[in-house]
Length: 247
Image (cartoon, rainbow, N blue to C red):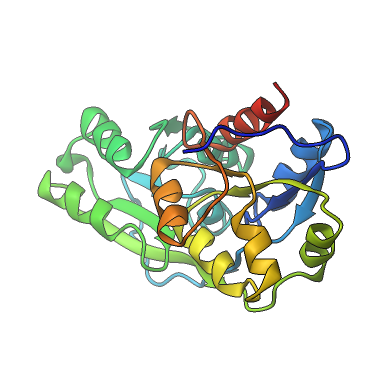
């Protein structure tokens, strides 16, 4: 990995590939830090109508903040919530859920949290996740004896059109860095980049990523610029890594 070079004073643009919900919040935080947010979400997130749900689940499991809104509309706010991370937990509390615990990490940490704080005899666990996600989590909990009902709360589709604002910012050499929050969003975003000079410019950018998995996805795609991995898999750590470019 190459050491990150300092952005010039005129290059303060930061491309944000995070989809909503979360894109606007991250953009505001980046603007407050003195950067210029360039909005270019990699995915379009669509909420889904959920099917039949347990009448009174023992607990609600949330693997993403993108599932919180759907959960709040379909589940009693008195049901205890186990969230994959602190940001998802914060969103669940803001939505009105009364009892919320954060695993502070990933799906494996969420399994440990649930196993350490409940028993299969307490009842069914309700898992809200994105399409194609949460399957391994549900299987792991079932291996521990828990009954798990999994429902798809949202679908995320890759964007097709590459934003003209990004092309313009690249042409004017205004971009200091790009943020990638997941391997899937990184792959989707890169698939939309036009071939030629724009692609070459993108691949040479400084990237700040959520985890080693995302960094690996970039390198497999042929990324040539420096890649900084956040100290922990959350948005505040991503912003801290971005700020390290100033020092």
